[in-house]
Image (tube, rainbow, N blue to C red; front, side):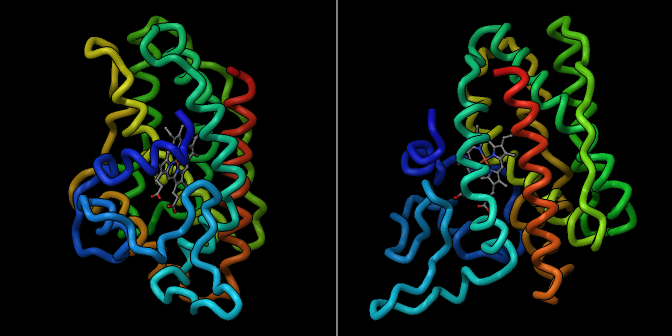
Length: 242
Ligand code: HEM
């Protein structure tokens, strides 16, 4: 099912992760059954609330780094959504192809992020890493791990680029939580169900740390470059298993 339709129908019920301090009112909104406010971004295009001439101001809640990354990667996400949703997770072969695609992208990206940000205590990167869960699911299906793709971040601002890439990996949990609903009860689900420990704060905790780690807007283009590299790595992997 395509992203836009899922967001409209289901996003309010399926954003995973514990809600600690709530850094993002939009995420709080999705945890409720309230209808989206009139200023909500278009989930199909991922464009944040851009000011529209003569009609309204930009929503100040949607001017942080997360919204910049979301806008910069919207088209890439739409493509990842289409390719990632195409597998029939109800059948072992479709589930295996889905896991193989992610197993091509994840190792290089997790390693690059860990190398650049491994010391950042707030991130709790070891808890967030999902490669062991992914490998366990592949093994349970009797599937050998595929060759991982290289994932080289551009390198000019390693911290900002890695944070942008981490945004993509953490965001992909939102789609995974939805896809998990298509798995048979007996299917291995360590990867799709994976969550870091409660102290990591789930998606809201990650977003709060992201904004705090990169207050200087001059570094945001580097974060965008890292996010695009991460999406492109996923897209290359997804195309291999399409
Ligand atoms: C490798 C594939 C994917 C990657 C890397 C990825 C990445 C992301 C990222 C970075 C976000 C955060 C966007 C934000 O800032 O709000 C996100 C959100 C989301 N994704 Fe994906 N995604 C992938 C596949 C999917 C698939 C297949 C689905 C549908 C089943 C999906 C559904 C969603 C939903 C519903 C959200 C929440 C949007 C919102 O909060 O408004 N994603 N994803």
